[in-house]
Length: 345
Length: 263
Image (tube, rainbow over all chains, first blue to last red; front, side, top):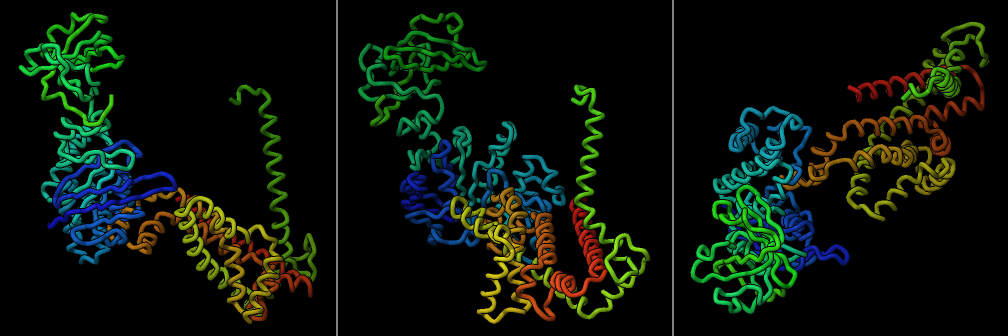
């Protein structure tokens, strides 16, 4: 199956005075798995629906391959969509749901049946083809929705928070399976979620969105380790944003005149674990909590801000003995102290 | 909860008694016609002194009455066939539009059910007269469709509002144009509401007399119009026979539809 690149070129969409998409531009490579990540209201679903053809941009262009689809009707786009609530057709059997896009394309009956059955087998639903939709579990419905979206060999697949209705274990299984399906088919996929862990686990690249704009687009590792804005840093897990002057070098000088981001899990109690280029942060211990695999310490350096420190239980020799109110110094490798340009703490 | 009221037996008897009275009050005027229709007398008398089927024979033997029956049934069927698809499309558009525009359109569509029938009939008469359509089946059909659309919309609006719109988007993304999304996804799932709407539209037309009196004529006279004329010109129990048959048909149709919905 030949997949296509997508070009989103300064797409804007407003609802009255509310700007849902603020001149968004984004290039998605053929065969790429790209996630749009952001809180609700960030514009990620609006962008997805614009690609699907259900939202018409005020301005800007959408290109699928070299074809301009900005004003093309949704039924002529050949894009497979998996909806958040699955949107299966309850008056049809599992098989009829999956055959539906083929029937619309006038595929001969026998061929349509065979392709639908093959696709059901691909999503591990063989034997359930005659079932009613109402008789399926949440995970099975999710698989039917997937099968229906890929059976007609679309060039692009869009997924709108497809796992948000499933319980945690099932989510993790499905994350893996959706990614495997993507790799097998090589289909360009745009995946929308507000779950940062899901985004990091599944994607080739992640585009973090907020207030109708793309804040940063990069590989999961770089998004996590090298956030370009304060918003991205804080959206991607426990990030401490530290004003200039708080973080010191090991011999007491200022570590940086810029605002630094250090993730909670990058701190150590033992300076040697932080390496030769360690930076240090001192503060009063406000609270400590044992969370099983790690300890969570809350430090208060001067300035009133709180700093979260996460020490793996295996390395937390002294944690149990620490008393709240006591002054504690924690260390991090300078490489893990990431300067956030232009961010005032 | 009932245990808290030691005298609930009395309350229940009163409630049942009141309900029975209300039912009787609603049904008696309809039921009193039934014995009248089996009277052997030339006059409408109650209770009848002798019984016969002569008024039924009179009805089925009369070319005029039969033409009226035929017109009414054809008109009812056509009204349902036109009003239900129009109403469904209107409800879908109103649901998709939303906001004040939709409320305004809804107001206009429901207006014929609020405007007095006689005004509607007079207005329709002038509109049709200008087009030379007075007395045609088409003219009466237009009037009946106008009256049936509000009824259809009242039945279908809540059903359309409950519909999971993502399914239509899914169908569209899978390659269905609007017509196929409506025909293949919406219609099959709204079957029961559509059946109710069809029945209501059919009965609205069947029952309508004012517009028919103004607009229908000759072979296109509907049964209710002929009944009014007959009451004016010569009162005989044929009217009672027709009413009885009418009531029976309506009861049977409604029963069949209701029972089908239950199962």
